[in-house]
Image 1 (tube, rainbow, N blue to C red):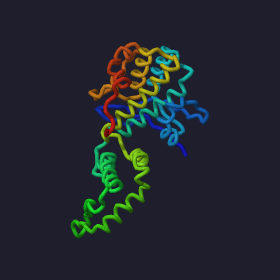
Image 2 (image 1 turned 120 degrees about the vertical axis):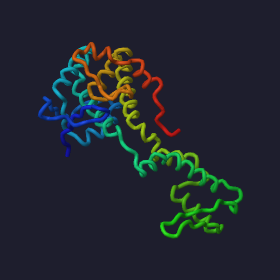
Image 3 (image 1 turned 90 degrees about the vertical axis):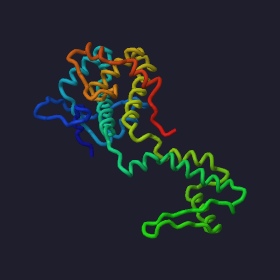
Image 4 (image 1 turned 45 degrees about the horizontal axis):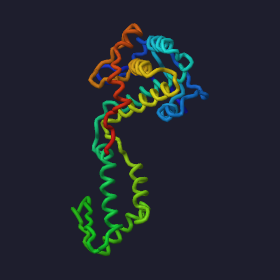
Length: 270
């Protein structure tokens, strides 16, 4: 069952819960009939599954209304508010996370599994199985056990290939399927990936459907991100939201924002 999404502010380079007693809030329900563009909807799914309503500070919503009026987007307000809260939810959940040992392993999942597949490929395509590499197991109590016996090694390699459904005939295709199941995103780039995904898909929808021209789409996205507490410039520790829409639009670094579309940052382990 869904629940209320509580707004967060970005301050001192971190996300903080608002002080309810000091903030006037509007609460919106998420309609079951909300129509979000098919390319943007996957970015909102985790938010939509968890929440059935959301908060927006009155002063922020007032500025959003000015933004919608400026770019003639009033008819899209229900969808845009949900997309904005989904953006804040996803970005804040991935921002400023300290990497644990387990997360380090998760981070290297793609790279290490790719090396593992190279070993299995060597077994499947070997012309002389007697030259199989030895296998080592590091036990919890008895140190390292080295397996050098040819027949035991053969059984181990064969069992591993069977468990991953790998054969000489399907290796290239099957290995790509297996690699797609691993984590390919660089761990500390998850916040950037959230930004890239939202920026590119919102921009594509606005421009491809001729809702806004390219320059106006960039301006809209820049202010939209700012109002939903997501910084475009990574050097900012504070988000400065101005009183007037004109000042907020003029504060957007459209050139930097455009890089997220034309030359996005490196996000993946390949």
